[in-house]
Amino acid sequence: MNYTVFQWINGWAGHAASLDTTMVFITNSAPVVAVVFMLLLWFSKASRSSAIAKQYTVLYTVISMMLALVINVALHHLYYHARPFVTHHVHQLVSHSKDSSFVSDHGVLVFTIAFMLLLRKDAWGYAALIWAVLVGISRMYVGVHYPADILGAAVLSWGTGAIVLLSAGRIEPVAQVIFRVYNGIAKRIPALSKYNHTT
Image 1: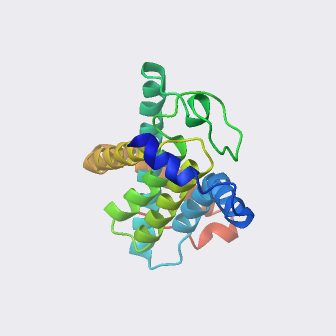
Image 2 (image 1 turned 90 degrees about the vertical axis):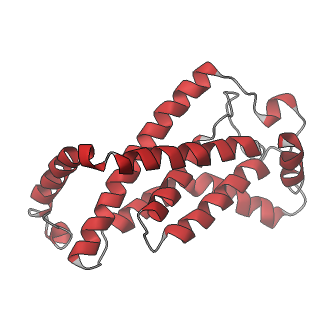
């Protein structure tokens, strides 16, 4: 089933240049879009209380992402699953190392953002989820991941997101230090002063 679904999605590659270009763009731009998402949340023009909530969301997302990526590094060391292009003839549209494919780092990146926004009930949550799904599909389309790699990333991201939110009380002292440092910097930079939300 894993290979069958991959084969169906990857089978579309190489037939339409415009679709290939779009999928390559989506897969390559994921880290950039992730950074933009976080910056837009942090520098929100919402009301003070809402802006503070969004900055907490960014903080929780980063912690959740770091936790998920650390777990993923351990998974890659403990279990090697060859990428599709290593064991099969595929339409590979982007270059990639032959490291373990399970789970997808790109998947962890995008689903951590999407799930944290949803768990925090942020208005951008569903848009981020759609983007995450598109990135996941693009990773299969370009030939570097199986469906299980993407689903594994989604499960891992949901799990670490839930753990971080359940541990919010223990994270609070760290959050306060980060906010104090940021606010101290923001007071000295006029462009950032309006985003100085003292908690």
